[in-house]
Image 1 (spheres, helix red, strand yellow):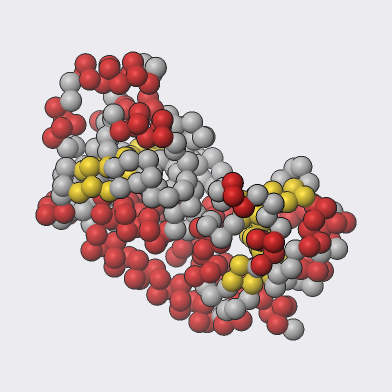
Image 2 (cartoon, rainbow, N blue to C red):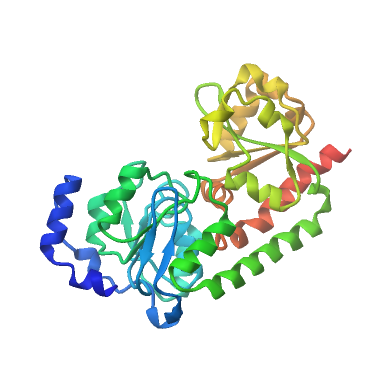
Length: 347
């Protein structure tokens, strides 16, 4: 733990609780031995300041107790050899404990124990984060707002997003988290290795290169959630050499809203023009229900087999929030699936 964190008196934590209207109930999770090993961090990397849209994170020395929030940050930390003391629980895609499979594998490989699992949702679990006694809070791919950032900054330095919430590419995530942990060299090596593997697999399936795609998800209200160019799941396909269909921008009624997706009524799906339609589903039953809808069944991409459904919660999570850990876990399955749909477009 940082020296300032170790010396922080209980009265200061009580003051934080007053600000956030939260009652401190204990520090049981603080007894865990997971966390960064400062001996493996570059001592000359600190102090470091990481700017974000919400404010600066000033990290005085190598963090020993790391908390992650949002998606993906725990992947980057683990890939750099750091087991967080607390990270989000994943009911969707996680195991019985709420841990994603590639995350569980890496924790086991590092000989660590499962971190405290933070209550998932859109509300930041401030009290649980206080109990973890972090030295740094990593949230570059998250939806925290200014109020959240300000409260969290009373606990520890917060690494947030540089421009917009839920939009930071995996390449930038590993770079900024490497900097925060004093492991920039290791982060650069991971970035190069992962980028090379993505390129190599794309080269094995050249049919995907240059094909345009439309990435969406169905919901219960006869609407599609359409993902814009800033979303990392879209960026993953661009990394493979594909291009985003012009239909994504053409059908976007509110491009100024700044969100990473927009909603499109089934009434307008006939206007979608793309070589490949990519969508995700929790299970095959959901796929069958979707394509059984007469409006959907009439779409050229569906009729002609230019449809690449991503099926299974863990697979969905891995492809929706690609990281240096999840990419190796899912890419060998993902690219051939895209290539199969792209082959139909080439006929």
